[in-house]
Length: 379
Ligand code: SOE
Image (cartoon, rainbow, N blue to C red; front, side, top):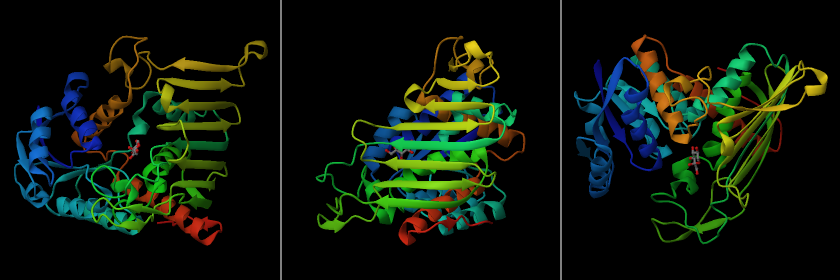
């Protein structure tokens, strides 16, 4: 089996989810390559060393350019803050490396377009870590839709609710809080949370044609962790939008970090002509399914426990009835990436698909700013 030497840039929460996936994938999936944790790169050398020791990286580096240029690295995995994605991804592509990148791909469509151009010109495999596609229940939803079981789709409804930024004492910027700094993040919940909902939605139900959005920044100024000054907040704290899909179906999307009591509640519902689907991240191993074709007196919502061998990915894990969780979605993503690369195929979601999501988030922000319906850019 071929070794695939990984250079990880960034060691935060996402660096951990990715590292765990690289380590586990060969234990559970028959894939053509074996990821080797070659180098972890981050600005803080001491913490990078601790991370390397904990996760098994052989080397530590503080300059990402050295990792990108190293002939000993095959794959650059970008898990650093959003403002670093474009520069690293473009350099990695030019160096002929495979590139994986955390979501959102860029801080906006223009940045993502430059990244897409770079990987497509270089012809290197690439993938964005939109991990929720790889929740077995969500993958099953995709199969059911593609099999035509829902028939014509009328409605799509998605929400991603959190509550961790309600306190006005919470600073913006710096490690752990860069998601609140618009210069680093690009946007607030639109790029951080709605991007997940949009990626899943377009995968399940096709492209989005136009949107009408409303955003709000509830806390207008916060102390910046790096400058110590109270500075205006440029991110959206909440973002809601109506959308029309290319297939004619209507949608509502909502994301906020101000829904007290909700830590990471991603839910989606799809209503078709024949059947409906509901899914909830807090109960991620279940798919709620209603089929109008069922016999009348027994017709009702089914709660399908997605743990059987015929469910997506599940034959690779334990035995029927035993469920898996959040971290496994990243293992699935690595497994799919390695299988695709081994077979000479593109691994979805490609950077081009990541760009399509950023085009929608751009339209959402533009619509909120102009208070009008806005077409999503077509490419
Ligand atoms: C934000 O809190 C966050 O960590 C996102 O950045 C992730 O993409 C999401 O999956 C969970 O929430």
